[in-house]
Structures are given as C-alpha cells and as structure tokens.
Amino acid sequence: MHDPIHTALPEADGLAASSVATDPPRRVFRHRIETRLWHWVNAIAIFVMIGSGLTILNAHPHLYWGPYGANFDHAWLDTPRWPGYLTIPASYNLAIARRWHLTFALVFAFSLVFLIVASLLNRHFQRDLRVRAKDLRAGVLLHDFREHLALRFHDPKRPEAYNIFQKLSYIAVLFLLIPLMIFTGLALSPGMDAGWPWLLDLFGGRQSARSIHFIAAAGLVLFTIVHLTLVILAGPLNEVRSMITGRWTVPPEDRR
Amino acid sequence: MTLISRRALVGSAAASAGMMLSGCDRLAQNESFRKILFSGEAINYHLQRALVDRDALAPEFRPDQMSPRFRTNGTANPGTPEYTAMVAENFRNWNLKIGGLVSRPVALSLAQLRSMPARTQITRHDCVEGWSAIGKWHGPTLKSVLQLAGLRPAARFIVFTCADLYGGQPYYESIDLTDAFHPQTILAWAMNDAVLSVGHGAPIRLRVERQLGYKHAKYVMAVDAVASLAGVGLGKGGYWEDRIDYDWYAGI
Image (cartoon, rainbow over all chains, first blue to last red; front, side):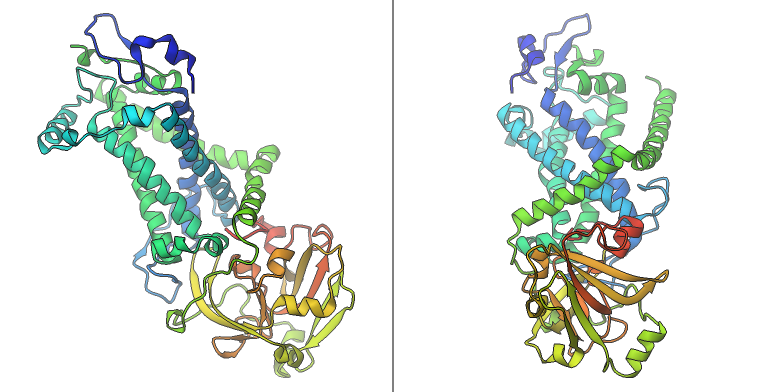
C-alpha cells in the first residue's frame, strides 16, 4: 500500500497533517489511491444497482414481512411504478435488469471487500474514521450541526479531517448499509439460502430480507443525495478533483 | 459559487444521470459489453457451486408456515387438444418418457410414478419477479427416476420438455447433474396434500428447490439426458433463456 503521491508529500500525511495558515492556496493530499479507485467503481456500481433494482421492483411492486409473500398475501408497502427515466433498462425488461444487477452485485460486493482490506492496511480507517467518545458529546454535535447550517464543514485547525457527521455517515454506509445490501441480496438467492440458511434467520425470512433490501437501498439513495448536495455546497470542482487526483485545496474560509 | 450556478449544476447533474442511464441501454446492446454483462451468470454459478455443498438442502418449513393461497404462474392450462384429452381421461394414457443419453429408455405411467418411493417437502417457491409462496410437494426424486434409465457417462444436463406450447413450441427447461441428483429435486405429482392441479402443472411438475420458479417445469412430458444444450431449442437451455435472455442458472 505504498503510494507515491502520498510519500511525495510527507508534510501532508493523510489527514494527520496539521494546518498552518498560509496565504497562497494550500493543497493537501487527502485521498489515497485505494479510496479514490473504490469511490468511482462503487459510484458506478450503485448507479447500476439502483437503476436495475427499480426495474426488478417493478416486476412485483409489493413488499412483505416474513418468509413468503405473493399477490394474495398482505403487503406492508405497495411501491409506485418506477418510470423509465429512472430504470435500467429504460423500457421494462426483467431479464436484462437482472443481468445488470447480478453482474454489478459482484463488483459492488468485492470492491467493498477490497476497500476494507486496503483501508485497514493503509490505516485510512484507523486514522480518518476513528470516532472518539468526546466527539459524540451533545455540545460537540450541536456545535458541528450549527457549523453545517452555516455551511462551514471543516475544522479550521485541521481542515482536511472529516467532521463528525461525515465520519458517522461514512461508517454507517461502509459498515451498515452496504453490508446490509449485500447480505439481504444474498438472502434473496434460493441457492445461497441452501448454503447459508443463517441468512434467513438473520433477516426473518426471504420476503423480510427483500423488504430490508429495499429500505437499505432507500437509505443509500438518501445518503447519495445528501453527499452530492454537500459536494456542491463545499465546492464541487475542488471536491471532485480531490477524488480524482487525491489533492485537495483548503477552502479560503478555512485558512485562518 | 453563486446559488444560480449551483442550481445549474444540480440540473446538469440530473441531466447527466439521465444520459448515463440511456448510455447503459446503448452499452447493453454493444456485443462485447453484452458478453461482460452476461458473464456474471457464469461467475455466480461457479461461486455458488463452490460455496454451497452439492447436497445442501433448501430450507424446509412447518405446515403452519405454508402460504394460505399458492398462486399459479406461467401457463395456467396448456389448453391444447392433446392435453385437454389427457385431463379428460385423468392422465391414464399419459407417459413420462426418459430418454436421451441413457442406457435403457423408459416410459413411466402416472400409476408407476405414484408407486415409487416419494419425498414430501414443504419448500419456498421464489418467482423471478420477486414473490415467494410456501407449499408442500410430494413425488419421487428425479435421481430415482433417472437411475431406472441409467445415465450414460457423456450426459451433462437433464432437459424437461413440457405439454404447454409457446408460439407452437413446447416450454422446456434444463438443469445440471448437481441439481438433477440433489435430494430435493423431485417430480411432484401432489401439492398441498392433493393431486397436482392443472394450474400447478398436472400431472407432474419438476421441483428444483435451489433455483427460481421458471426452472420448475410444469406439465413435464419427457426427460432427456444430453451432453450439451447446444442442440436443444435455440441452445440456451430453456424457453425463456432462448427467447428473452433469462439466466440459465437461476440460483440467484
């Protein structure tokens, strides 16, 4: 996990660098190659999974709790018909949607495994996502929340560090929502149910797993909307560029 | 950055998402990308065969966990003159023909099938569309039926030809030998403690419990062992596989 860009900028060691107020735009190395690679692969995978997933949901737009559920059974949710401009493919085709979904499911799941292994080895998780008890005190959270409302997202002392809401939402996505998508997805497979029957015990039956699959997907869509909104508010060019090159310019308002 | 340009950015982001979606459809029509897209089936097949023991059982349920009403799907009645005549005479002259790459081709009457040792299982039926229904199935294992005929060493797949026609062609399905010899793979002649109804595939329906519903061929007339699926139908191993690109391996 030796990254040439990373080592070329020893003063900006990941997020651990201390901030010094300097006038010319200060650039820090913010995202390692493993993170950037995973980010874009995962962005494509989620895009395909949501689009093709909506087509699959259109095939039977009813959700149930328990091991079984079909037309004569009680559905807790009847979802609307998802329009063609949101689905893959645009015109209803369950077979092709499943091809997209089940091929990109492999990309989606194995790229998360890659990210977790890589981020433990390069210590991205330990350094950048660690939440300390003092970060969760009500006063701290409230202060960070007010800062968000004022569109100030960075700690002036360490502008390249993730703020607490960023940490918590990244942790929720990486360790809860995406694993939930993967394991509820596996529970939908009759083949995997034979091999790993604990999947059904864990989620309370196949139709419950299907419902949770949909709820977690809605959670990922919500995360993506908030994520994109904040990228736009925080300065889209700088943010997107940093996820491509790894280098991030400290916004002027944070250089105090 | 001003609010207006932010708004424009959101608009262009939405527009580019739309372009990406339609781009996906164009990609799926590209021959080489289509190969990649369709390669997931083989990967999932081999992963599942590697991860799941060949005899691992699909979950079975208690009688109180059964669906109150088990809907029919696909063909509800083949409706051909031949099939209607068979129903009228209670399948008395119906025969299940077991042939292809076997040592002794066999024709079994319904009475003979019903007299064979049978397995009873309460299992979940998962439709490719997403719904599930739990029902009780009863019939001899496919393994015991195949053993009557004796598979020749070249056999790799078992093909099921059905009485229901789609555009004049019989519905058909196929499975590999792992699923064919699986202890829960049965030729069900009874469902929910009653003789199998026309809606559910009378006189017999294949149960292949670790795959989706369209693999569970109804109205089975013939069982053939083959070395390759290339010469059967349009070569993809099943009616829906041939016509609209459904996965041949429907374990997921």
